[in-house]
Image (cartoon, rainbow, N blue to C red; front, side, top):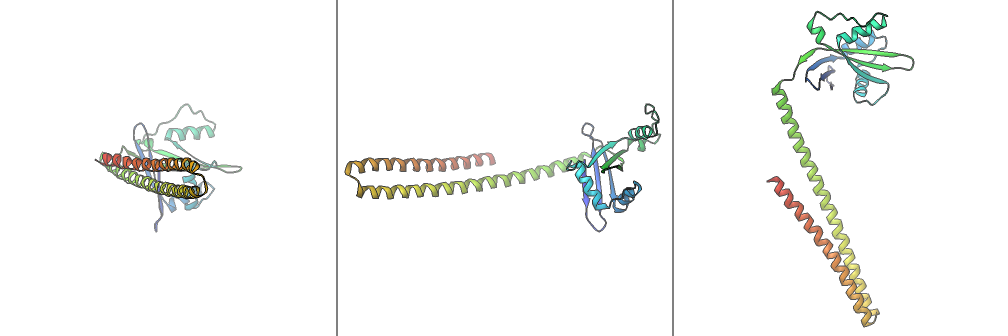
Length: 230
């Protein structure tokens, strides 16, 4: 189900329902007058803006006070007979094919002490045009490429920032190790100095190895991206 709201000088909504299995479609448009006249007939008037908000909440299932159902002509006749206390087993099928093919979207508003039904009639429009479907597919493919490109750009940017922070951290640690090395040279004995120097050198090598690995990982990711682009 699709809902399009046109906020122009003459606001209107376009409703489109499509059957998943058969791809049959039912469509209709409703302007302010049509919506407000329909709601007034129910005895519970709603302005165009309020009704659109209710319809959007029902479609997106964002509120428990509103819901939508889709009925055929036979469904409505059965409900009408049940309300009148008649048997619903025998239904008079409409002679008009267009009437039989219609669908009726019912927006139900559950008030505190009442339940109001707002009906919207949707004529049958057949199956979607293959040319239109191809245009939609091309449009979706283009949008998908743009989103993928933006996502990759965001990932690359975040990786660069992360590596820059890692390099800054490693440089800071190296400077601290060098300062400790310089201090230990003047304060400790020769043997102790040698041990600590070796330890600090090992720590520096570990930090530098980590930095090299990060750079290699980045280069590998860039090579992988180039291969993908090819």
